[in-house]
Image 1 (tube, rainbow, N blue to C red):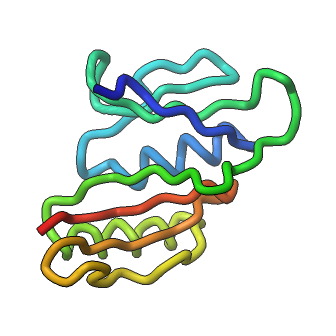
Image 2 (cartoon, one colour; image 1 turned 90 degrees about the horizontal axis):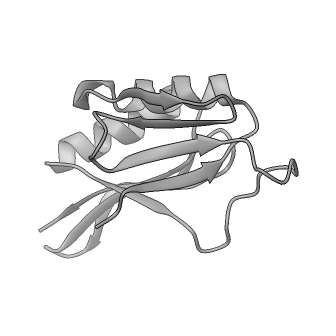
Length: 123
């Protein structure tokens, strides 16, 4: 249902390095790079994350209440993505843990531009 999600960034090279590094084990790469916007994913036709310098040339700003959630196969994978994100320059926004007993496990970070990310497992 989702083709791609776009987030504003202040440094394209840093953002591309962060997201391709974060999801390298899943085969993510820059699929299309058009200068001020780049699409990161595994291949065209699958959901992607786009990083861009805002069209209006204003500073990027994370949305209040906006978060991008990335599914993980296991709690260990969610925790590993959280740790890798921190190594790549993210900041903690909620350590990995069970949020809803037996239903939702989540780990939260802010990317280098302050965009909120969640790595999660249902069940």
